[in-house]
Image (cartoon, rainbow, N blue to C red):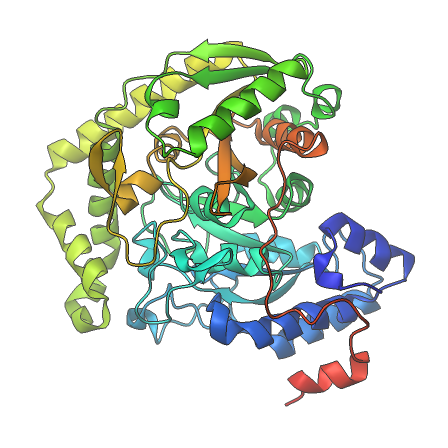
Length: 480
């Protein structure tokens, strides 16, 4: 059998259903890789090998039933877990002990998925770069001197480096889509509320979304269907859209003009223009879209983030001030100086932008933008130049993503190629509320015609193809 970590989620499920591969084999393959790589990748804060193997045995005994039965995954370390610590990437959470798993994890486990461990992140999700002075900063899988993006940095690195089949992250301004784009992955921020945040350490209640990082839109769809909140109306909206899901022909793609393509670095705009041209050639209708004024979007987003984050951290900051990282501590403290008037006006802006984006989406199937205006920046880079203006790296990375946290619309990042230095480029697809499956079907169509797809990092640690050691020998790695 070839390296099990290279197979797709659906392929692994077929092999397990047929009995050609056992859930325990798959789990051990991913665990062994995670254990071997983590000192370099820094993608995991904790690995729960013993519990993962026990779970794999239970899944096997039950006949590997369930949509995700036997599939190993990881999650950002803000999702509550009973068997592993929940740190939120901070020393300030050292004694936090949840009494139950996050609801999203309960649903995944009920579907047979196997949790391998908890992923590294920007401390308390307070940053888009993924930098973490406590647990270390995960490097970009495509270049060790570049950032992986954040705050779901470890989740992206784990999936890109094949130490998890998929991972859960959270996204408040782009924290799933940005690392997906920088690491060559698929990143889904679904319609707000479609993945439960119950049992997740919050950053900003009004903007937080839980999301999925995967290697393909098909894999992400399987996870989404297993985990989503589903009422009758939502189920109808999230139908598979099979007629259009298999083709780009007739698809109405909205393309914003102006800054959305002009305010990018040199390699990104031509690649997105090429994608648009190819979509048109394959029968898609390309429709110009005039986007709402975004002048105050970042300011409003920051105002709400700081107020809500400070409200949650206020007591802990008083008791454990020195346990917070300096950048997080200083940022959170700003929240106490924002007036109630500013907070309310920001929320009103959210409502206005939600209505404006919904109006733009009435006459198109998906809206297409670059995911980020830059590729992965250097680990120590502080600023980039966009349209001749110096911009902080964090602001640049979330330039195209943060608006859709304000509006709650589903947004998907898919990888569409590399720049001249071999770094991944992502494109963002945005859809109407509860049209998450339509977005994933569109992304899958781009994958099928070769316009998008997982960008696999060069793996210097691989020994090449070959049979792994017997399961009994590999299992001894995790015997206690």
